[in-house]
Image (tube, rainbow, N blue to C red; front, side, top):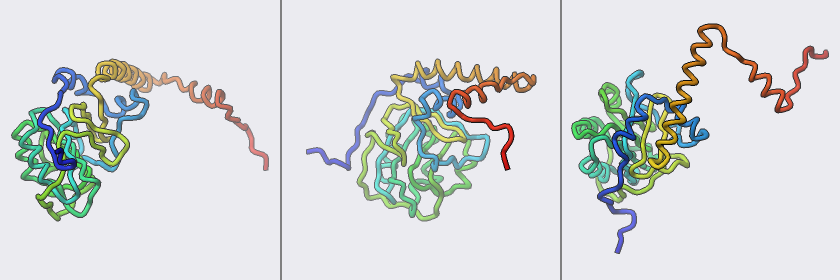
Length: 234
């Protein structure tokens, strides 16, 4: 009989590393724009790394745990593969930290690229200085976790938003936040986002040259029926 709520799925299908790496230089804002503004995890999940060092890219390895408990997170670190991002739904619990410096240092030696925690972390100062390892969380608190379970590994989870994270999804994170990409949509999304980046670069050139055309603003207002009044009657 299945022990619902306390089980581990040992394996899942991962996208190819080449497909994941295509999103290396993309801003999360541009990726999300090409998902019609969907795909973003909760805005409260903030990176603890120092500014300028926030770049997270990898394959989602998911964990669902009850608040204040990290037994399944420890197991996830032992199971995850190099290039994975461990995404933890700790139910948004805030009294206890789910992980800290020891766990992150060990995870980094295994090639894990970072953590996303719908909950709290501790040792924030130390984690902020880690290189090539990014941690997102709701915040920091000194109170540690317990190790009792239950929980599940490699099941669909949600991190405080309506975005479902499946094991094997592509995770892209920067200082703005995190977006989640389904592998079967990644090639099309890559092409669209690449075009967006090129368009944005051209806009930057126009701005610097003083030739940025803003006619679209008034055109849009007119099309939507906005009335522009030249002088207000008093």
